[in-house]
Length: 476
Image: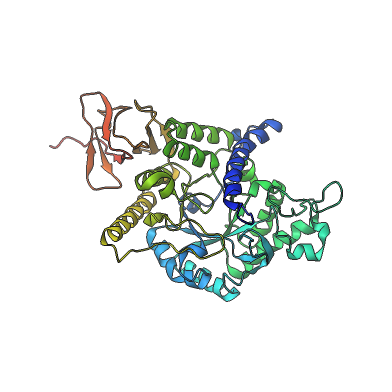
């Protein structure tokens, strides 16, 4: 979500309307839930996770785009590219057998326990997982339990497995698809057994749970207990901002509040301070220590490079990787690919452009920059487990500024999210921060001593990301 499963030529119009409506619902849901139950989730602790998960980075692989073959077998050679980039988790778009309806999206599932023939075979998935594991990559599957396809095997087995309207007919949810009835133990057991199947029989490391907030939280708690018996380190990512997800079941939540704030700044010209406000709201709403996804591109939205331009898209990624939380990259983002996501037909990423030397040089430079971004985060513990300290500045409409602090280590981030050059002063004493070691470029950044505060000239979408250099002892 907010993917849109529609039929016919009205799809793009419905998609646009649905995206906006769902975004509003997602933003309202966490606050409404907390209010209705009179709970303050910010005072509760998120469930503990293995330390490696704090250092994780997620790469979404959409089969129709990733290779010219558009299937699991064709994607295997590209796994080395993902590992070389520096990602740690590969999230596969839906591969379960989809509806026979020719207009069905990959999220119209007909059989949760079978692989769609267009994606490959059981052996293809086993080989894909083995190749990923050999490269120290974990593999997550995309699953959708909020609804099924109308021709799902559950419907043929027993229509009583589905929610009914008042007049006894099969009910549909937000999309025109039937809703499993989670009040029935048989439904819960069937779907939990499917999750266990993929982990036990294929070595799958986790699941991205589509419309996770549309399924009762108690179901996910039961699923977690069952999965823990097979692999207690299974990753559960909820495509929801629901605050109680991480109390007992999930490891990570989407952060739509953040994405919509980022989009409003980069695309619509909202003040950069909107980012800080959204961060503060989410951290007051979610449990303490909750892990939130930071993304600026995925299969549900227009490509970042098309919405924000190349410089704006890169600035968004710099922010994604320097804030706390789990950074997320959509395939092709690392080469500034503009190709729109295709739900059914292949739409391969433009990985190279040998016929145009200038474009090829730009692709290679963008890829090199993303490798630096991944390497920076992997090598700096302050970026994966340090606190975020927001710092006021004189250009709040254009610039965000904050420190990542872990012990005595401090990393300063000053990021211009506007398309104009700015001179900005940050509320830090320059005598303590007069130079930083750049983390995304060579050398040092020195700040002028005369203003008494840290100040910098930033080009459009420019930034400083640097580690504070402690004072050195006097040479004897």
